[in-house]
Every structure is written in C-alpha cells, then in structure tokens.
Length: 621
Image (tube, rainbow, N blue to C red):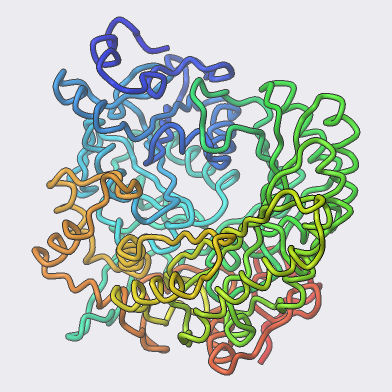
C-alpha cells in the first residue's frame, strides 16, 4: 500500500485524490518483495476509464494468480496530478506499492484508442523510463503493449519493446515466464527480446526494418536478424469456459464509466460489417456456456456488491443460449434486485420476450445501430438489415413501454451520397411517426429518438482498409446537412468532432514515420487527446508539418489494393484475399450472409483447428 504521508502534499492539491491512492476493496496483490517478477499494468487514460476496462481486470488477475508475478496498476494522471509529480520531483507510481514505474521488470500497456498514444509516452516519462525503446538499458523495464490498436503497432513502434498480438491470457504468461527465465540467466535486454520474438503472437519492432518507395509507400518490411519470423500470428483462447474470469477484483472508490459487473458472453462476431475492425480481428466466434457465465456473475456480484450486470459482447443477441442465460440469471438477480442490461442489440434479432423479462427489474432505453440511412448504403457496408426490420423492432420497443431510443450512424462511409445523409433524418422521422401511429400511454409521454453520428475512420484489417476518409471539410459539410434535414424536436442529434476523427485516421493507418510526430507531441507536453478539453487539432497539424508529415497521406489517400500495408506482417487468421473480395463486393452493394447462414471462407477457422461457428471456414473463391 502506498505511503499516504509521502503523497499527502500532492493529493491535497488535486481534484480527485481517489484516483491515486489505491487500497480499494479487492486490490490485494502477491508480496512484491518475494515475487520473481514484478509487472505494472498501465492504462493510458484516467482511473475512471481504466477501472471500467474488463481486459485489464482479466490480465492482472492472470498475472497475480501465476504464483510468481506481482502485478500492480497505474493510470494516466490528470494534469493537476502530473503538475504535482513534477513540482515535487516524484515519479509516477503503482497504486498498490507506491513504487515508481521504473523499478518494475515489465510495464504493460493496453492500447484501446489511437488518441491515447501520447498518454503512453507521458506515463513512461513520468515513471522515469526512457521514452524511446532504443534508449533503454538492461536496468530498465521491458515495455509490452497489446489491445486493438496493437494490430497496427507501427505508429508507436519506436516506444514499445514488444507488442502482444491477440488475446493475452495464455500468451502473456508465456511471455512473462520467458522474461523470468532470461532474468535468472542474466541475459541481456537484446537477447531477451530476440527470444521473445520466437514466441507466437509477439512482435519486437527493433528486429524488423522498413524501407520506403519515393512516393512514401512501403517498399519492404523484413526481419533484420536470422530466426525472426516474417509474420506474427495472433493468439486466441479456444475454450472460453476455461479462460480466467475476474470474479474477485478491485472495486473503485470513485464512480467509473462502467460501474457494474461486466460479463463477457462470447468473443468474435458472425456478422462481417465491412467498416468494423473488431468484427474481423476478434474472429473466430467463440461462446461461453450459460452455466459458467451464471456462476461467474453470481460470484462477481457476491464479491463486489454491485447492483447491475452488463452482458458484454459485440452483438449480444447473436448468443445462441441467450434465453437460457437470462432465465438462469433472473432466477437469482430478481431476488437480489440486480439489474441486467443488454447492450448492442441487433435490430434483426430483436428478442421482445427477453427484453420483457429483463425489464422486470428496470426499464431503460434501447440502443440500435443501423449505421446508414438508406438500404443501398447498408448493403455497401454489409449491415444486412432492412428498414422494415428497423421499424418493426422500434415498434416492439414502443409497445413494450419504451419511449426512448438511441440510434448509431456513421457519415463519410464509402460511396456515400447526400441522399444517404438525408436518409438518416428520414429514418429518424419514420421512427417518430411509428411511435405516434398508436396512442401510447394514453397520449401522455412523448418519444425521444437520439441520432448519434460518428465519422467513418478506415481501420486496418477491414474490407475498407484501403478506402480514404472524407476530407475534414466534407465531413463537416455532411454533419450540417443532416442537421438541416431534421425537422422535429423529437429527434436529438449528436455528432462527433470530425477533427478528432481525422487525427484518429492518421494514426489508425499510419506507419513508423509517425513516431517522430508522437515524440514531438510528447516534447510539447501534448496528452489526453481523447478528452475534448485537451485535444487540439491545430496543434496536431502543426506537429505533423514540423516533422515533414502529410496527414492526408494516411487519412485521405486511397491505398493501392496491392500496396504493402504497415500491418501486413500480422496474421489475424482472416485473409487478405477475403478482405479484397469483400471490398470488391462493397463496390457493387453486394452483401455477404452472416457466418451461421453461410460460411464466407474468411480463414479464421485456421486459428482453432478448423472449428468455426459455420462448420466451414476453408478459404474459397
């Protein structure tokens, strides 16, 4: 536990000292003095965001249950705390022991969002660790990073020693066991990292060289040492019932973003939306059994005292045992007055009966994601839902007593026209009209339809990875066009800052040359770019220009279909041949059925011995 007297002068001058004191219920760790290896898991955003992340809870639990690791936590400090650390000449520390980050053997980051990269650099610098991996010595921790952004690690490759590609429960324990053995043998940092590169699912950037063509595209990407693999294959957990679940984890002092038990029901997705990175990188589809989920939920509620369970997965209504799971949960959650929430419902799989059961505890608004306003564009992105299905689902929700709906859309999607933008407003109006087509609640309450629109960001490992993002001016024009098309106050219109989405696109499709921009941003004390009050588009453009980087080259350029992409060396199971085929189908607004209906031959079954939800999986076409 941290020395409160030592940190009292700092904590007295910050807005939320609860972010920095540790000692939460359930935060016990193995004794760091006797552990063979010390790990600090760092979340590059604030405590409230990090304590809501299920992946961190899973992996810290895996480490601390290993028998030889002592794993602690640290979060990105708010500027007031950063200022206090610098003023008192004190390093960023781990919450459990209060030890500086630079005394640990391994520093682990999860990369959930491209705009957290400056936070990674800031935490390293505040923790007393050289920011650039080339400047670290045998005395410094090994810095490892994973998460969705690690599927294109190149923009941040200069700062991370090792990237973990894929699911980490098994892979990271293999990694730590190897580091422990190398430490016992007294091996150098260089030799340790070489041996790590031999493990499946791990990428060591210093062991690869990149050469560029005159036009800035990649000419070659090759290992620079014999024995280093040419490609890195992602890791998965085949049997989720046997995977670790954190039934006993720390309960935060402060209110967090997801202040509840999060129950991961399955991994992967059967749908194949062409804009969605998660739907591709998390394949193949794997489920947990309802019996194991019920047991996990009961233990987690008993330990934490939470009054809500959220069933989390990419599309919860695709779970084949959903009725059985909910019936089992309601057997005891009703008695304990524990609420169940069902996020991310698919409109074409709308379970009226299940929603009625779940509402026995508490009614709440529903969230759907049509993504596009016209059928043509929904076919382009392979959403596989019709307007009739959308209206029917909303009508069932209204009949069930709900009068609040949230609909997610995107603007800037490939092939989008103004007609598609106007279609969003028209669809929202049709939903409002559906509500008023019957007398509901005796004519009492009205309806509210929230239309939330984000900007399309082309992501690696999607069929749209080659597509350009609309220019900033075009994205903003489309946002205002939609605003002008909404004619009723029953529709609340919200949209994302297009400037943020443009910087996100730069780093999503970036290469190693962006490392110098990140270093320059760090030297200018830029951080917390995911927060409106600290993000500055003008500062980022100035950074790019000062480093000789053209942001449009990454965000607004159509990549060549046969171009070497910065992430091509990573094997996610889903083949590039499949991505190209889906990209070509999108140009003709041709849809692909979900995996249960028909196998599309994406290749992901190669990761789990040919077993897949579709019982197929062989590459075709």
